[in-house]
Length: 279
Image 1 (cartoon, rainbow, N blue to C red):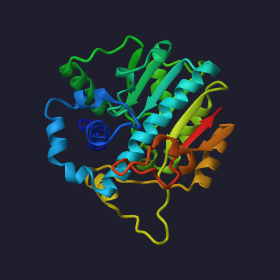
Image 2 (cartoon, one colour):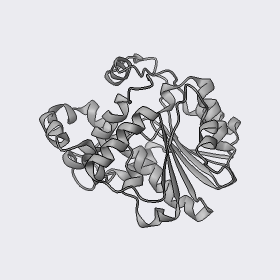
Image 3 (cartoon, rainbow, N blue to C red):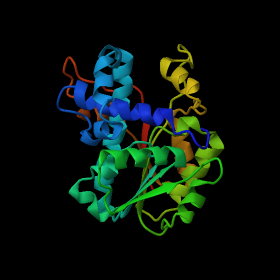
Image 4 (cartoon, helix red, strand yellow):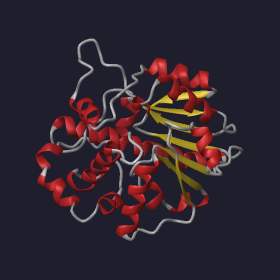
């Protein structure tokens, strides 16, 4: 991504979360009323004008994954507070809205949003334009990963490495090389025992399918092509090698609890793409 151009995929993801609020039936997987506000006054019309596209099976499957990963990360974050987690670092935050709609239990956390400076600038501009107050426990840490590592960027932004910390790293690993993924995992695993990371990855295409897909084509055209694919076994090995002690995956059987299964509801994802790892 060029220095002065914000991420198109981050914006597209925000539209998926907003579409979930207005097109999908209750109970929602993720309640995110801020997403639509952050996108501006014309966002709802744009979504409704494209309703057929948003309700296509492939679009619903993608939306399902996007809202599930955020809901799961936030549920794990809430549980982690019992282990003494006091810091929440959202790596590749994009237009994530947790910091702006945080529940009462999150007030004790220091929340650090990490992203490319251009994407972060656009987000902060939209926050200001929408008149959304930024809570006092939120820190924006602009890091250009082409020029510095996560560890270097966190140090530069005054983030403490001696506090039990929760990381979410959602929808990012597929855009990075394996060495960059490994470096970031090792940085996260250096934090004190009890720290946790929820991370998504893209599985390798099956032998019966092509690596090309509408979503792969879209991100490639946006200048943010997929680079890395992992099997669950391979990704678990990377997490353990990085220094995490316990790794779990959100399987379809476990994620079924988030989906009510109605005729118009979102489908429960069939592939494993979300990992939780505890130091």
